[in-house]
Length: 146
Ligand code: SF4
Ligand code: SF4
Image 1 (cartoon, protein in one colour):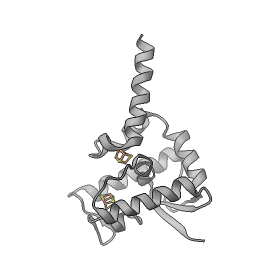
Image 2 (cartoon, rainbow, N blue to C red; image 1 turned 135 degrees about the vertical axis):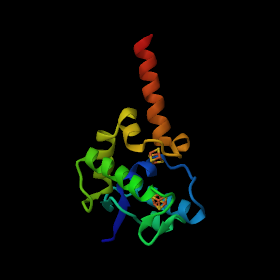
Image 3 (cartoon, rainbow, N blue to C red; image 1 turned 30 degrees about the vertical axis):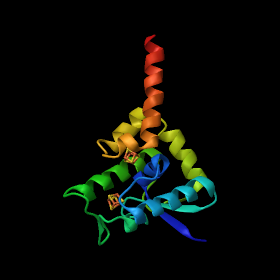
């Protein structure tokens, strides 16, 4: 059975994906991986803290590293490690898509946690995962203060 490779922080980006990205090839790959993650709970996913299948479709990937900016390789690896540690996983772990999604919802289900993981990601205003959790958090704050 094919095992899909996804770097850990991309699990969250896939949940927030709404058709935007670094070019047509990249967007196609994101859409395909999102479909797999959301509609094939039995699909096997290997979680990584390094470049994955999505990076291979990205114009910024060079010889196995993210070269989007001078410090990108280290920054995205840090993000992956924050996700892995939040999920209680390590790089190379293989889980079914269904189990992985349940784990993400349970462990990264709050805006505060997401902010710590994503930092100043430039995509956050168009990322549905980020904006939805922020909206829930804002509603909660406004209910508590009314
Ligand atoms: S805010 Fe950025 S890093 Fe975080 S899930 Fe969304 S796209 Fe990914
Ligand atoms: S190469 Fe960098 S910018 Fe491109 S998808 Fe991978 S982590 Fe993101």
